[in-house]
Amino acid sequence: MKNFLMRNGALIVFCLVAFIILIFRIQSSPPLLSQDEASFSNNSFNISKNLHDENGRFMPLYFETLSTRLTDWKNPFLVYWTAIFIKIFGFSVFSTRLSCVVLGIISIIFLWRTVQLLFPKGKYTPLVASLLLASSPLFIIQSRIVIDPIALVPVTMAEIYYLFSYYRTQKKSTLILASVIAGINFYTYSPARLFSGIFLILGVVLFTKINSQKKKEYLSNIFLSCFIFAMFILPTIVWQIKTPGLVTDSYIGKLLPFNLENIISGYWVNYLRYFDPSFLFGSGDADLLHSTGRAGVFMFAAIPFLVFGIFNLCKKYKEKINLYLLILFVIYPFGIFVLNQPYRACRTIYMLNIFPLIFAFGWEFLSKNYKKIAVGSLVILAIQFPVILYDFYYKYPIRTQLSWKYRFQLAIQIESVLLDSSINPNTKYYIDNNIWFAIDDLIYYENIYKVSQPANIIFTDNIGVASQSGSILLTNRINGEGDKPTGSKIKSGWEGYYLLEKK
Image (cartoon, rainbow, N blue to C red):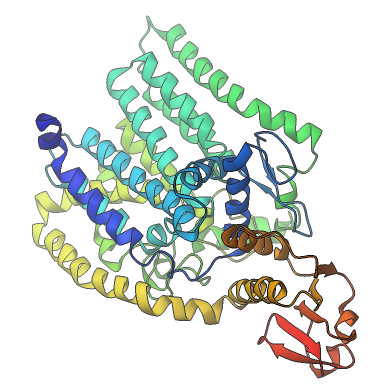
């Protein structure tokens, strides 16, 4: 035990500090919950009770939500992972978000180990790479909310670690482990359906050492890894056949049209946006679910480590690990640059795996050749990070409440409807069926307060019901005075969701 602590003391201390940063004020920043959090949490709660989902399926591979206008299938990894924490700690905002904090800490552990593997003599390199990951606003936010992008990060980091270990040792057992983890990774987050296999196959092709006597072994290793990965994704193929649209529905209507204009410019404009310095290190994502609004994906101080990390990799691009990281850096936006939607940091969350490893190469180069730049960048980080943290803990929640009108207001109003309807059983409370995720939010608060849905809460397509005597309607279809049902007035709500009651 003593030897273990001596060997891993720095990592343990770093993880404890990171845990405190991620857990502090976790129930208030971000405030309340997003609709996806409600959906994941509800499914995890059901699994924790009896291993059945909300539709009565026993341990399903994917989770069908009740409330979306289009069928929405949730990936399984985070649901089952969060169910463990609900089983242990009970159902609450804290327990569900704690599950993602732990995923964040696991990400740091595997990053630290991977950098140690790359730079066994680099005394501070694992610390610097882990610091730049742990200070990432995207990493901090995603590690504190119950949605599936963060699930991809630790599993991908583990996949990379065992691929690099395979390169060093050429042990088939390590290759098998990397292939199994890649198969698990397929079920973490939608982009992993593409990249978990790419990371694996590219790694096996590059990292399997070959000579004239071992060509058959080279091919057999590639076949073995592909076979193991295929066995993991086979159940999804079966589910897709039985449930058309399981995988494909979420992409329908989101692709840029395939035409000459997009081939020449449209796709590539989108692609280059993901390398925009203002996106990576400046203002970040426009959506406050993926950015603080005051910093980019990474701290500004990380720029020198990225620039010189790329330079260091390019200097020795023939080395297999260097080439592997350069390829991943170039292709990381490929899964989503063909979409017609605003670019989102969460869709390219592989940045949290690829960039910190490049930062490690940058630190190695700078610390040996331009030590003042390296130390100066860390000093800037030490100044900027506390400011960003204070803003995140205390000011970001206010910006979020104002920005997330379609998320935050719904949570407030649904909670209000549930509590008021229990107090006033003779009043009918109608919820507009047009509201996306309303059922998920209602079920979430029923689980939080341990109550069943009162009989006086009714879902309806007819917003004219607010004119009925004594009834209250929650709707998001009010765009002006004339849109309110006759005889009703706004009880609460602003620019989004409204509670209406009879005048």
